[in-house]
Length: 514
Image 1: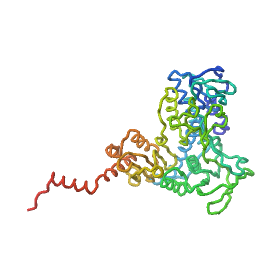
Image 2: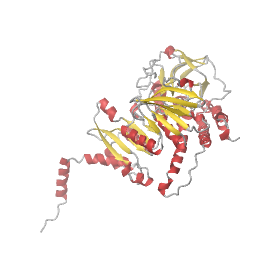
Image 3: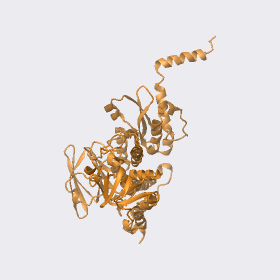
Image 4: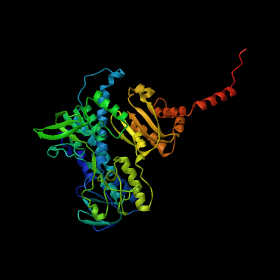
């Protein structure tokens, strides 16, 4: 039997990954110990904090109840992006004819091999987050369920620990909507999606957020007949409406996804391996959709239920997040939080950033502030949708007056040559200045391009300076420079144009006609 034919949890790669991230016979550190910092949660935020604290000579404990690496390594960024890459290869193969490459008979992807590649890559990254590595860094690693017993004490499966400071970094988990019948179905979430052994012939995805649209497009490209159900009027509701519309066109016209917006799920039932989903459209039309597998991607919620936060005096927001101030300090001044557990900016890089800020403030009485608008984001569909800072809606609600500049990739030479002209770069500046407040980029390389805008914002580099930055030709990034040119043209007002003309006439007078 080959690895691809084995149950996912029995392949050598999976056995190795689990042994690295939660060793079966891991020796528990000494009970009753006192620590300068206790970190609860071994995902991105927790690992960054634990490693950083240990590097400073802090006596630190790290508590994880499942697998080190958290969602990012095990059920999020790493496995999903591996599948997305495979799906893009399938899509590129289908588009070869536009480049003069003779069309060949299409062969369906080998789904077990696609999944095995993902698991092999995930296992290859796992040593970076291993228990042994963190022990060698000087971290006491505990495996078990953590519960606060006081404002400065905690237990790990009845093992008591005391702390001077603590950081909660327990992350988030899939949110299950209160749909009748859902609990009785064998549905998928990101927790078990990557354990699939066979491609669902018919897949329904509930939720048009980043996870939903990424996986809907991926599985459609790999060969599933996909239906995407969104309760709102459009997918990716947090993004620019133009960005959502472009992506919706792609999903419908190029990827063949059955997209149902303004649609509510009324009831779900399952019989003989087939899931039946009763839905109702905003205008009253009802129908039933049948599928082989159902993926629930209707949002996420903070993992806080088992922590006994009331014993520590740590408050929650109305949305169930840990309540923190701008310094990431909870209502208990000795306890901080970072990552998904206390923010809606649920990204690995946001968790990393928050962890560093919280660590600095916790150990050194720092006053570093977390600014959610400085965190860029990207949805890794084709085209990608990336954003940083504010958008027009947030500017309006905040009373900030902006000017907006847009450059479409249809006018970008590299995009034309590559055959991927769908999308745009859009930058918002404070009216009357060139100060960049936010940007949205839609295109095949949006996730990389948004970093140039993030760097400009962090360094207070405005559009005037961006117009002077030399970009290699031809590149997609030249669209950013051309937005700088757009801004500079707005500086040439009629009055300034008349002054310039007079100066040119004086400096370079034309010869008198005879």
